[in-house]
Length: 352
Image 1 (cartoon, rainbow, N blue to C red):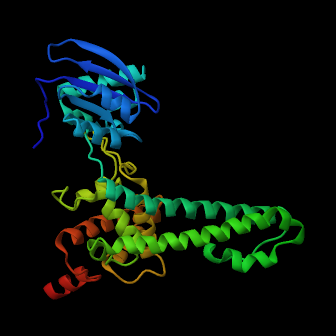
Image 2 (spheres, rainbow, N blue to C red):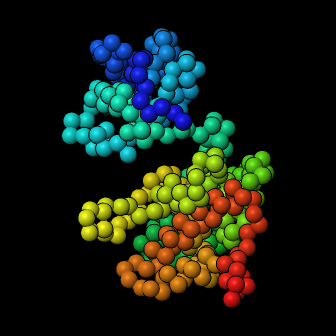
Image 3 (spheres, rainbow, N blue to C red):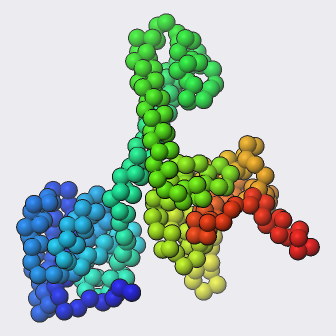
């Protein structure tokens, strides 16, 4: 287990800026000093070519390559999660100089106070970038389709309802003549986006074949290659949790806690972790609970939960099913079992 207190060497707080990085050095003899360096590989390598130290950085756009560079230079690196450290994220006198000092002092005291995180491998991050690029393309296409529909509506016309993928084919011929100069270029872009999205879908299927566990994770209804691949690459290590139940909390689908004495209010989910995989799981839960979802234990449990009523009962049931789905997928990943959609029902019937 990694020591929570690192002594005997320098501790360097490193606040990474886009162009300049603030450094606060706590020497082993108790003294301290400040430095400022450009956020480039050459400048960082030149400054950190020194005896091994404990370097504390914040997670961010530059944290991956900086952490790899520092580890190659034989430094002990801790990547802090500022979301979990309110001294950094919610300070009244927040500045780069102050943040670097706080990182160094917390790193000297106890690294667990920094809620350290571990970066994904470079290959996993590159494969995950394909899925995220597809997500951006889909979002852009949706905005353009909404723009076309809204523009036509302003002139008292309406385009027929259809799926986004079939929008160009089913609506372009119905476009009013006086709007063609403005909207025909938009249709061309939408058509090009359709082609790019199909290419990314094929690319994701090829990537999924390189990971045999994707077939195991994607067994539950509504979970396709995209969701299973993003889920697996986001977690990367299936043994990082002692219990599969922790997977829901890792993705941010568990309620926040603010208990004090007898007061224990019911709060919203934490929304910690990657929002992309959380959104994909909620979309899967929406399909499971919808009319096209096949009969399974998850669907029955979610529908019973929605019947309890209360404020936003259906939305809360959807999030709860997404959380259970995250736990189920992790359990399948760890055990490699064959998924039984009605396994709970069959077990209880056999017991009866």
